Amino acid sequence: MAHIFPGLYFRRARFCSVARFSILSRGDIPIRPSLRILIADDHTVVRFGLKTILNSQEGWEVIGEAKSGAEALALTIQLEPDVVILDINMPGMNGLDALKAIRERLPATRAVVLTLHASQELVHQIKRFGGKGYVMKSDCDRDLVEAVSAVAAGKTYFTRLPVEMAPAIPAMSVPRPADVGALTASEREAVRNIAQTIRKLL
Image 1: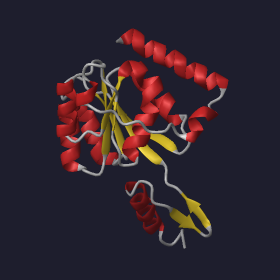
Image 2: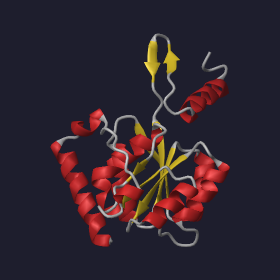
Image 3: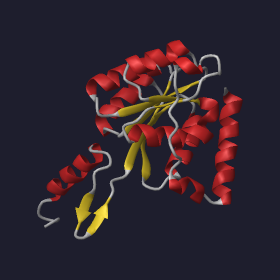
C-alpha cells in the first residue's frame, strides 16, 4: 500500500512527530519518532558544536541551522521542529523576539534559550515569551542534553542561578538520558574540545 498512498504515510508519520513521544506501530514493532531539533546561533563553530552534541543522542536529529532570529523563525515555520535552540544575541531579530514570534505561530514547538549571562529579568522574559528553559553557553556540554530532554517531555529546565538568586528561580533537575553514557571515548573527547572552543569565543 505504501506505493499507492505515499502521502498518507507521510502525514501519519509527521503527526506522530508533532505528538512528540507518541508511538507509531509498524506490525508488532513499536517505533518511536525521532526528536527533531533546530539550532539558531550566528557562530558557525558554535552551531557545529551544538549539532555534534545533539546528534550524538540516539533518536535525535538536527534538521536545520539558522544564523539569525529571522532565519530561525522562517525555518521553524517551514520545518516544524519539536525543539528550537535559540541564542539570545543574534543579528537583526534577537533570540527573545524570535522566541516570541515562534511561540505565537507554532505553540507546540518548545524552545531552549542559550545565554551568556544569567539574570532574574532574563528568566522572566524567557518565561513570558513562552520559553521552556535556558542553558548557559559555557555549560552546553554539561547541560544541553538534559535541557532538551526536559522540554521535549513537556517539562522546564532553567540553569541554576548563583546562590543568592536561586530561591527566586528554582531549577528543575531531570535525569540524564541513559544513552549519554554510551558515547565512545573519542566522542566524549570531541565534545570536550568543542565545548572548550565555544568558551574561547565567549
